[in-house]
Structures are given as structure tokens and as C-alpha cells.
Length: 270
Ligand code: IPD
Ligand code: CA
Image 1 (tube, rainbow, N blue to C red):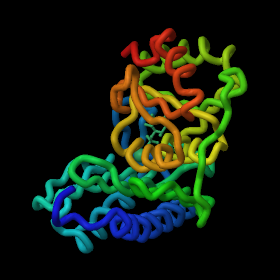
Image 2: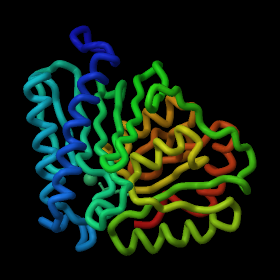
Image 3: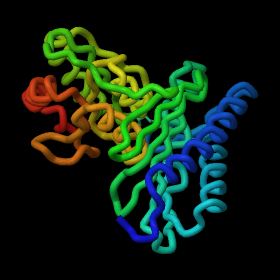
């Protein structure tokens, strides 16, 4: 860890303050009406004015509080720091399509990395005010309660969350994977915000989660919350979780889900 980097708890305090204000702005902007400002990778991959305004607010707040830190955000990309060793990773609105439709499953996600390792993260549902936090080695928490993942051991009884990318060829492959998995699990949930899916897994409100194609801002904070709640959060074959695949599963379920996903070529396709 960088000599100059603050403790994870200190970074978390900053993250929580900034994320709460960001969530308030996003909520207020939704109440005032929302429209598509632009599309990104495909016509269904939308960005609203709120995505941009909220990320701008987060970047401005961090620049005041931690001027030497680097940043990576979904809407404005990377900003270099001045060598503090800290990098903030922000998704201003995870679940943008839910946001557009007024479905109360979207979140601000903010994480802090020190020397490339996520050490603090907060995910806040901007509709419900539910807020999940974690620090590396300090556990995962929601509303003062320490979180533990599901104790399920039977894949057939497992409620599995997942998500789909925006590219139609990728979605077609992901749909085939789901079709192959669904006969072997309790059921599938596609709720529309990866960070929240990971947080739900952290408290056993789903048993496990997987998805191909996640970006760093989808994964950083929620991945730490899930890992600190006891889930194994990795890619295939022991590789780190990343764009190829993220699997988050309780230890007793991990190999069962992993091997099924390998058989279904979940990290394959476009
Ligand atoms: C998306 C959501 C969705 C997941 C996609 C993400 P966005 O993020 O997390 O649940 O399936 O892979 O891109 O676009 O709403 O920030
Ligand atoms: Ca987003």
C-alpha cells in the first residue's frame, strides 16, 4: 500500500459522503423528468443528462477533497492523479435503463483503489436509500448490519442473478447461456444493475451472480461488498473477475456454478 494513502476506512467515509450527495442529485433529477441525452455502444445503451451531471458532481467533489487522486468514471473516462496511489472508480447511475423507466433498482457506485486494489466501496440505491459499504478486511455492511452471503449448497435451489450487455450478438449468446442454466437452478433474476445484484448476493437476497462484459465501474464497489460478505468473486479458472466473466458465489456453490458456466461457454461469444 502507498505510504501516503489513507486507511480504507477514511476513504470509505469520503466515498459515502460523496455517494449520498450524488444519489440525492440523481433522485431529484429523476423526479424532475428524464430523457435520453445520447446513446453509447448501441442504440439501447443510453446516457441521460443525469448520468453526466451526477458523475461531474462526483468528480468535482473528489477533486476538492482528494486533488492528487486518479479517477475512472463511466461517462468521462480516466483522469490522471498526481501519484497518491489512490484511484476512484465511479458509476454515477448503475441501472440506467431502470432509471429511464422509473424502476427503483438503480444505484450510485463509488469505490477507492489503492495501488490497483479495491479497498473501499459504497453502493447506494438512489430510490430506496439502501446503502451497502465495505472495506478490504473490514467486512460488508448495510445499515449497521454486517452481511454474510447465502449458505445454500445445492445448485438446484440457487437463485442466480445475471445481466446482459447492450450488443445484440452478445445478448444472443448470453440468452443461450441462461437457457442452458435455468433448468439446473431455482430461478434466474435479471434486475438491471450489476452493482446492486452483487450487494443483494452479499446478504443472501440472491444466492449467486454471474455476468460477462462488466466494466470496472460496474464491478468495483459491489465486488468488494460481495467478497467481504464471504462470496468468492472471480473469473473462470481462477482468473480475476473482469470483462470475460464475473462469478460471485458462496464457497459451497462456487465450483458447481463455475463448472456449469464453463460447460455453457459463458465467457465465450462476442
Ligand atoms: C449495466 C447494468 C446491467 C448490466 C450491464 C451494465 P449501466 O450498467 O449494470 O445490469 O447487465 O452489463 O452495463 O449501463 O446501467 O450503468
Ligand atoms: Ca452507468
